Amino acid sequence: MAEKKENQLWLRVATIQGIVYEDYVKFVQVKKHNGLMIINRNYSSVMEQLADGEIVVHEKSNKVVIDVKDSWLTVNDNRCNIYGTEAKIVGK
Image (tube, rainbow, N blue to C red; front, top):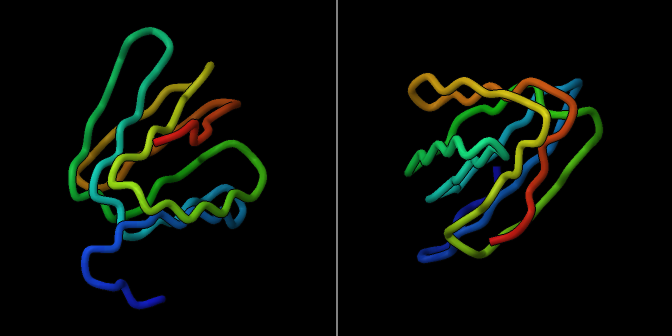
């Protein structure tokens, strides 16, 4: 795992057979089109069952928005499970 410089915030997302791992996220906002929003501060665990494909993102902002369309999710402690066909990082 890369070292985190002081005051540096970034996000790394990489899928391996549908499992997404991320580190160094201070603020994650997951928003569904039906208005449901889940905010989890100091989130630094595992997100599972993202849409197929590989996503690698380096983000210096302390706010990351993940747009979940035609999907649903569950949150338990620091674990967020996303199910469905589409989930993407749309901006900061």
